[in-house]
Image 1 (cartoon, rainbow, N blue to C red):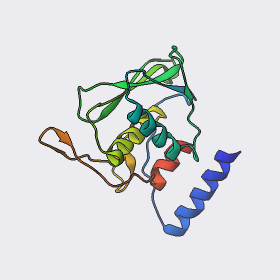
Image 2: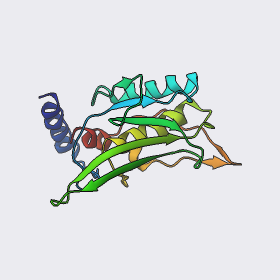
Image 3: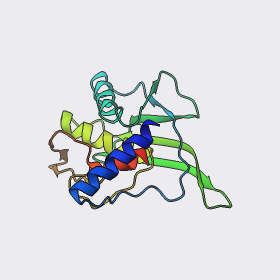
Image 4: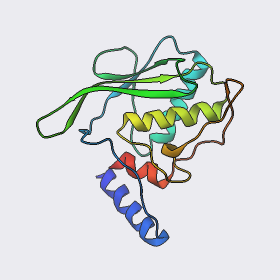
Length: 171
């Protein structure tokens, strides 16, 4: 019910503002709602920042944390293979070309020292975990660039969900 109301409100806003939404869902993904497990290897500061990232999304789509890892949750863990973060999906295609997701992992670099940057990256990856793809909409979290200088991720502005990001979350 609340999602239907949000979609309706967003549609009216777009009509008034003459905007075009560019979000794209991951092709054929079956909508699901899984809880999140934050790995014990994540520092206490980054755990708080992950929770802050979720709080930015929670008014639109409730994200829940569970205290233990099992095969039916989305794991958030440190992985320094990249400067920022990434989301990995495992699953299979049905005969109807629907993608059934068995496992989702979100890797985040332990070397991100800026609050705003960490939140931006984490929100971006949380949106991926909820089926959102990259887009080319200016200001969208799904069209974000992070500056890296001398092998260090630089600070960004505080992340704000764009209308496009919100539309993707409630689709």
